[in-house]
Image 1 (cartoon, rainbow, N blue to C red):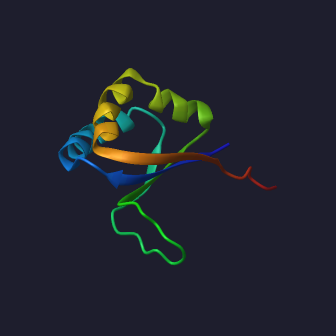
Image 2 (cartoon, rainbow, N blue to C red; image 1 turned 135 degrees about the vertical axis):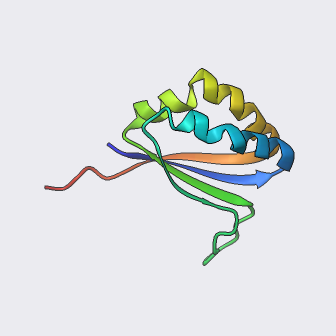
Length: 99
């Protein structure tokens, strides 16, 4: 079942985050994920949103997401993400196909 990883980021060290971002796709492309959105200026339609960026990715299933997020290459580059931004990361299950 498809899962969606949603990250809400508040930048704390832009240089560190930019290092992460520069290396992200080299790691990401090794897995079966799809980058769905990455927006530093989303429109807030309701409520407060105290973040600077939203990133949405999809993976075929939880195993694929965890293979990516626990891979040695991602663990290495994520040090810059963690140094560069406070994050709330959600893993959301999609619906099973109907029919």
